[in-house]
Amino acid sequence: MKLALDEDQLKEYLSAERESVEVGLEEALTQILPGIPPQFREALSHGVSSGGKRIRPILCVAAYKASGGQSQGIYALAASLELIHAYSLMHDDLPCMDDAELRRGQTTTHIVHGETATTVAGALLIPAASLIAFRGALALGLHERLAASLVQELSAAAGGGGMVGGQVLDLLGEDLSLTAEQLNDLHRRKTGALLRSSLRMGGMAAEASENELRGLEEYGDCIGLAFQIADDLLDATSSARELGKNPSDAELGKSTYVSLFGIEEATRKALELVSTARAALAEGGLRSPQLHALARYIVERNR
Ligand code: GRG
Image 1: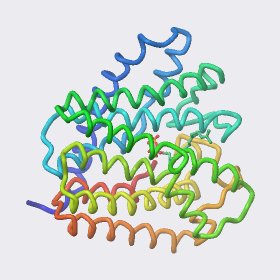
Image 2: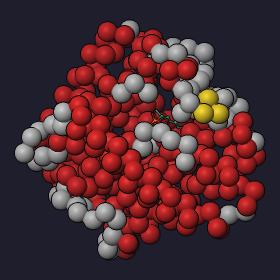
Image 3: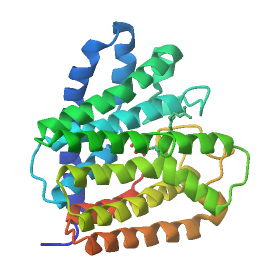
């Protein structure tokens, strides 16, 4: 088996995976939307269905398959990660946070549907994601105990010790010069925790061995940090139009890997993390050309 995908294979793989992820998300929306008041449905759909790379569910599915999982039902479980991600972006763009008007090349949800509907729709997505994860796990035929562990994994990654905690550090750090240690801590939580859990959830759903799970975790930690360094590099070197989002980190007075280390050193660090992530796969006994290629994609993406 080849160890990595070439550029064309990666493109084809990502495009096919995104199609399957969209199907999983549409199915999740058909479960969620009827249960919520009609005036919030459009904001919720806007936040979930406005594009994006869908990297979290793609990583979850890749980890599942790398650990021996074979069911297409994994896309239903993986949708739960994207629902949490969607809510976080909707809330992150609100005026009380980053006050953004542009995301994924489109007008942000609160500009189109208003702040109240966006706040409510985002909040509705949090319990909805837990329900989708639980139902998705049961539909995969997993034991209720494992389904509950998957919900716990997702909730912990999204919570105070993870994404929300990281966002708080981010807000408190505006206009301060953070140290490398503070920046790593912030991003391990804000961006890294959900990426790491994407991999862990895929592995857990396939009932991966301890060694495989350790490999996925280490891979997830490395690509989580590499993802954020790549984000900072893109933010520093591309226009809002090229990136399809605003405002920039500099406009928000945020410390970044580029402000701390400069472009060259930040790039070196990201590439080093890719190598460590790949080594972790080998140590975990995971032969996955897809995860191998995704590590590189995470730092070479252009948006
Ligand atoms: C109440 C304090 C508080 C927080 C609420 C807003 C929030 C929760 C969390 C924000 C977390 C956040 C914005 C994390 C950023 C992660 C990140 C790098 C996002 C961009 O991810 P991509 O590149 O986006 O995967 P696409 O558009 O491709 O989906």
